[in-house]
Length: 501
Image (cartoon, rainbow, N blue to C red; front, side):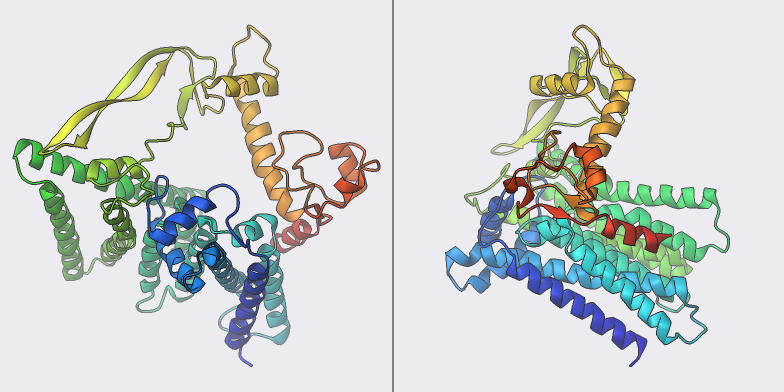
């Protein structure tokens, strides 16, 4: 049997195993957090919280039809939709692992030996199935949340860039880049998390196209990747709509034309520019420009799933978050204006005092034109820092900061406190703890607030757990036999590290 057939068969085997397990263990109804909102919205194609997930809702609406009119089964069938997406994620993950394994262990100009095939397929099986039943992935695979479909989009995109890498020197290989652009555009209608794969794509393109890798070259590739990510995140998702709104404001309020006239002209200008750019790139033989413009077109095509939000908002559904009926309310919806703005580069300390406020003028649709309204945008503070981590002005957050960091009464927070919170809480308690749940073990299903008995990672090796959590010999039977208590003895983590090094 050929390598390709074995690769395909084992990939589908992993996907089937994972999907069957996910369906068997799927939630029978709605679960915690946002799933109730997503299920209700998908069933009637309504408007969920900002910034929306229209593609996810439309796909889940398809799965709701398998309930055959039994409304008691709608949630279950949407959960199965997540199970199917997660099973397909495992499929593409298997193919990604085997593609990487083959590239590392085998040269294309030599025949592949049986022992190499066994090693490559073994790596794919272990990696794909380990990921399938990891804590976080399994959790998202059995409920109607966006993360299952988001994982699928990410897996397909990374698999596709490896397909491009294997064919980069052949004619028409750049079609894979266009496919990637389209999937990225579609993924915006699921969750923005998928955009984080773009820097990795930039690195793969760099490694394939360069004859000699350098630290500066890697840095440039990363900068370009981050630039493309920022261009999509702000330029495509928000600023296209923002300038469409400005066009419509001018045409309606200044020229007295109908609502939407400025938007039509703006869309016509964008399409004309793209069409002319593609025509120009073909005539002049500019391959990179042509690929970039085609990729932009397909990103916009995928992003067009958000037209569902405008269409359904104007149908006045029962669940209509922020009522994004016109271009200005739609812009606020995409910009997540209902949430507080969180400073990333520069911001205040939690104990800083406000000294002023910056106001922003916004617009709402009136009978014949857009009416100006003022909205408070942000406060000015007397004490700010770079890379702010302890910035919330809410009293209960301030109390938490002081207790966690040991800030005595009368002392002001400083940059050392800022970094301590970042490394101990955000990296340690949030990221590292979640990571170790998946590959070392989990104490129980409690979220955890820092106590020794709730939500910690747990290895099953008593000596290590005693150092980490205190004595483990006198735990109650309820704690020891908790069905959500999982101990992996570091084995998944060690297997992953062994494969990496």
